[in-house]
Length: 326
Image (tube, rainbow, N blue to C red; front, side):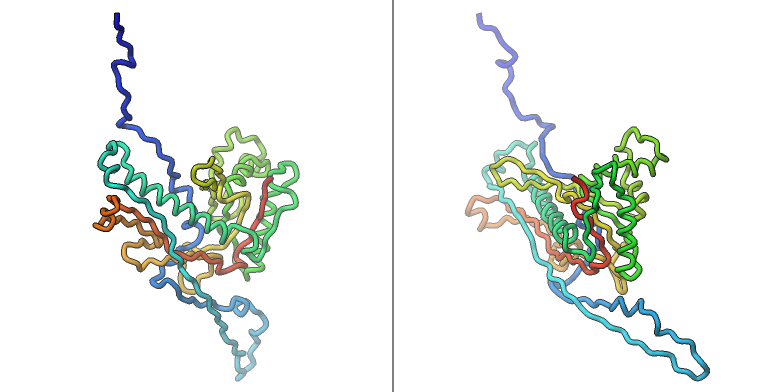
């Protein structure tokens, strides 16, 4: 006698209220947060730099006797330039696939999000190679005792030394921002020196409650950023090779809230924003559909582009800690 089973009375279909996509939250990207973004109307241009040493020099101010002329000094300026390269990536959607896809998939939406995620990863990588690497700043150190050595290391004292050193080398500018890699932050929140500052030496039961604002306060800076975006270096079709973009480094810098005239900064991002449809950050998302695309079966082509140049503009206004944890 035939017997119905649960499998025989149901044909599997995709859920209409669930899909899984793996696009990182945009909050993990810090490339546009640490240094001011300067919107520029031309792909390349120059900017002026005043001589810092001349502003801080002593000895030219003299006591004046009656009818005595003051010493006269001058101003010295130099210049540098930027060039905003254009970066981009795209995706095609063919007409037959779009016509036949299940509504829940929304592949065009997910495609656009994936493209933006890929561009943001590349920008974060550019930030790391430009600002978060050895050889970019006047002072570049690795602590004699790595911060992961909870017995012998002194991260607070190391940062205090770095801040004082930077203040002297930069002509008086204190660091107001600290950037660390994700692995560094995870070590710091469990470090005895940090826990002692938070709770007067007693144990903190849940280190996850140590917010970045508290770390900023302990290290004496206004801003504390964590580089925790993840990039996959594995080629398509091979196993994932995920790593935190920030590595095991830390950085102290002086950075203004916004760029402007007579405003010192350790670094800047020049974003070419005069192209039609481009945001002030130099980002554009474009969708194309025309007869030429349709002839090859493409219903729509989506492109995401960015145009920018990241530059260290004040190497003395940065202090870099390389490989501070094991």
